[in-house]
Image (cartoon, rainbow, N blue to C red):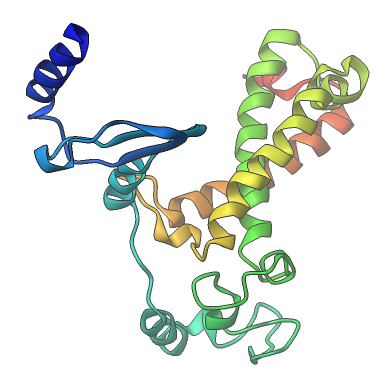
Length: 227
């Protein structure tokens, strides 16, 4: 009884200056509810805890809603959206190329077939992120082990284990926002913009492929011999 009285008087006083947030979970028993005080609401139901206040804060700081009107306007004014790299004019319902409004997760189909299509949102995003991680991993691992990328993957075997574990993890983390109707253009934080990620990913893909080809000819790790 004394403990409950202390809890009911001391805790609210300490939470009066806490930021507004909503944290909820599942256990069947409501432990604290200080909504009237502007403090977080804590509930336990079922054993899992979910804090929506953190997600709302992150969304407010990094997320921008992209409207259909913006996409249509860019589609009409951006010269690169009027024809593909092969010269074909995008048409709705075609296999490739599709108009921007059809291939974007915000306004187009959100099924895996559409997202993983040749002009979909997933392939370049996932490959670019894997290449960025791969080029950094190659530089560090070659300096530490003195082995080429091929030797680390197939001869030693340890690198292959990490690679197999990393690919689905990055792929899953990239696909989930797209299935929820969010492209990479919707997120930016300081210098971390979608355009910067695309160019860094493209350079990393070219760099990683060049690294593999170079090491296949010289039979030696590039980062150990030249850097």
